[in-house]
Each structure stands twice: as structure tokens, then as C-alpha cells.
Length: 190
Image 1 (tube, one colour):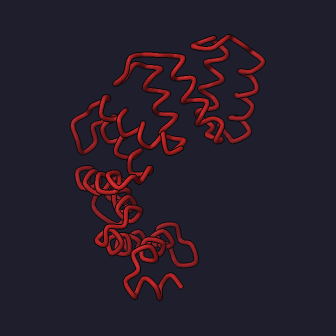
Image 2: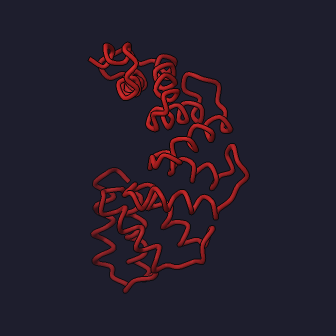
Image 3: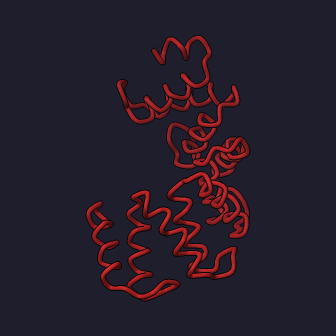
């Protein structure tokens, strides 16, 4: 059904078909074909397709790697409110990939994604507060963001929160609670 709708120009179906080819869901996996379908969707202003295309450029999947082109596609999708693109754009600024490194701008994009419930963005925002990257260091605020991500099941955030309880950073020290968070992370292979 995706193919029929995609062939008729439906952007959402084109994007979903791109996902199918990217992951090999019901079709033979092909990054190159995924890029074609993402591009069709992206050209119709589909934010998820734009983000998918950005991911392909960022990770060298089906196209020659270009952080700069990835940033362009991420920005288009992020400006439309796509939380995955906002998170990715935050990472680009944090690491200086395709843009000049800026922790302050990274925090801005992480916060936009985190406010929409994006667990990895919440964890990265916690990391920024823990280290004082782009924001004033605050263990208490780091705990808040780590907890939001940990409550969604993100193993690295569960481990980080366990460390904060273990050492008493920004929260009352508790080995018992620390072990609980460590177990949750371990149960996921972290």
C-alpha cells in the first residue's frame, strides 16, 4: 500500500517507504532506494523525510557523507518541530559537525526536542547540565533531565541517574536507589 500511495505522490507514504528500504522491512534493504524515497518526501516538505535524508547524509548511507548537507536537512525538519531532527541538530552543534561547534546552540536544540519528550535529547541535556556545557553547571537540573529520560527506559540515562544517586550529586545520596537504576540499565545490556 505504501508503494501505491508513494507512486501517487503522497509524501507520508514516500517517507514510510524510505523507512522500509532503510531498515529492510518487507523489502530488500537498500540505503540508495531509501534516499530516493526520503528525497521525494523531503521535496514535498515532509519533516520526517527531511530528517531521514539528513540521517543518510550524516551517516554515509546511500549518499556521500556530508555533515553540511545533513545540517541543512535537519534544520528544515527541526524548524517544523520534528524532535528527532532537533536532537540531531543539537548533536551537530555539540560536536561541530557541519557547523561551528557551539554548546549554547546545541542546548537550545536539545531543549526543544527534550520538551517534546525525546529521551536521548533529555539525556544529552542532562549531560550538558552535569558538565556545564552551554549552560551553568547544575547537578540538580541534570538529575531532572536524566530522570525524564530514565523513566522512558533509556539505559544510559538510567546509568547516569544511578551514578548521581551513588555519589549524591544534586540529590540525596542513596546506594539502594543507585543500585535500582543500575539494575534497570543492566537489564537492557548497558
